[in-house]
Length: 288
Image (cartoon, rainbow, N blue to C red; front, side):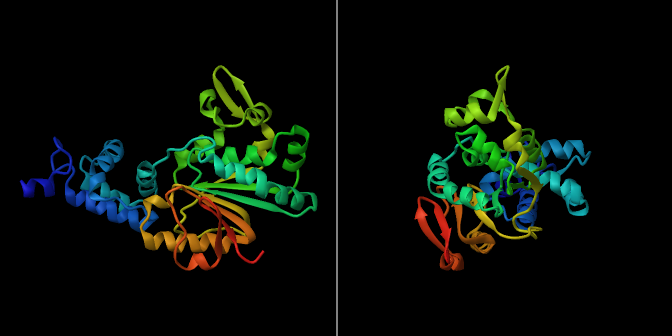
């Protein structure tokens, strides 16, 4: 029985097709590539996410597909994207957007009126719900004032490692019911509804730039940010990876800039010297 458990991670699937060794190899590759930790309990998830890619590639077995992943960067990218969890909502953790609106936005508006640049980053933007929640909050409940802000030096970088998630985010169209958590005045001003679907209007879309980016790799980014959102991404990383990543975020913030993280995530390690807690999972860069 013990031997079977070691060689047959998915009941009913032959270990010749998918074995514990295959799961271990995928887990190691994904951790090295993007920092995601896949414990043994995720063996079924790995099988269900990668089996369609194995079939599409004509690999037949997972071991053969793993060879293809290692030899082909595009195949590696498809596999990593398939294993990435893209599950998010509009206005998720509403207190973050309330803080952005009440405490941070006035300072950003003042900077824009002084003709200074304002930069925000939605890191791990997934299918875009977070990004568009940020943008609607920034533009605010006054249409003329919001359009004026959008025409100034205001940009939002939205990045993710999964191409299919970025495509959904850039399309900026969602089921109308998905936007119910967003304040009604913001929905009314910055979206258009038709046949049960909602599309973000041109002013919010004009300030966002979507980019494929591995948070563990190089960041081809110039300058620093006023605000960074990275929420419910680090829960998939180990502690050492989280500490390195948060330190990089802290260094990428302007003095006085804000970092928003997920409700189960914490700032630890050397980044704690650079960031101060100012609200539930809200941090400000020291030195303002």
